[in-house]
Image 1 (cartoon, protein in one colour):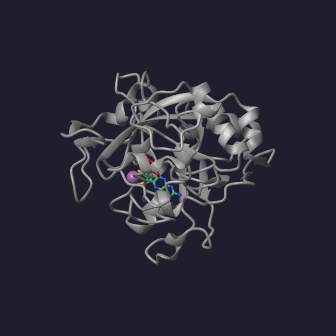
Image 2 (cartoon, helix red, strand yellow; image 1 turned 60 degrees about the horizontal axis):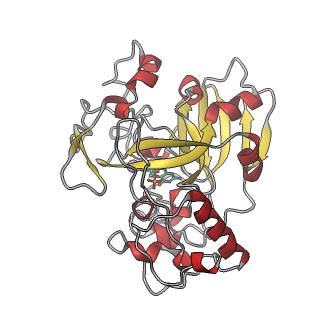
Length: 321
Ligand SMILES: Nc1nc2c(c(=O)[nH]1)N[C@H]1C(S)=C(S)[C@@H](COP(=O)(O)O)O[C@H]1N2
Ligand SMILES: [Mo]
């Protein structure tokens, strides 16, 4: 055990198996030192300084062998957890990780209600044991024009929806993030209507690609990525994948969303990745994969057209952007 524990920085290229990693984590947790206060606290985390991300010198998971179905290697754990849009903490992507370090995510419940036969409030720990957690290695394409490949763990959103039995009146699903100004300094921003809200059409929500993610790289969901549970809809721009969810409501009308309310002409309700429809202020034809130098072409539905194009049959994808 002791030689698994490193109190000095190790390089991200060092590899540990998931089992080794988890047992090391358990050990550190048991020792009560994985509480957010880093032994390397003097170093503020940043993308250029991968080592500083490692609480207590824990070896970080390796991207070795982690590829999406198109053959793209997963981004490094340090990239995924230090470059985040999470406006409740900050609009500065590189400030989120440190501001969210002590975010309290236990206990945590998700209330599922509205137009359903069996409304229910779930404890996150119950959701993790109720449904098998699957690994899904997905591309995440931000509307701003950057992207990553992320090995999520979670379960299909449809599992939880089927459990509560939407009535025939339910047409949309509305999601809400926790609103906790004491913990989330970004909520002071007057530019947005809080809490962060998002929505999907019910048939989109039932698609197998839509997951509630509870972890990544075999670790519980890191705070900057939306601990303890967040939505991931990989064929849509990243802002649809709402973080730190506390409410899921089945409704009749298309729900209003934070970004659509802030700038309706820039952020549509559907927001399917579409290289042919420009954002009013920039082209969406290409993207910058974090960790790469040039730009690469963006893909229709972010490369998931086979699984989701049918959902939009007969719709004008330029109009319903
Ligand atoms: N509650 C909440 N969810 C959110 C956001 C946010 O600011 N608040 N940002 C969105 C945006 S713009 C993106 S690109 C993704 C980023 O997810 P990641 O940090 O895990 O890569 O989260 C989305 N979910
Ligand atoms: Mo985004």
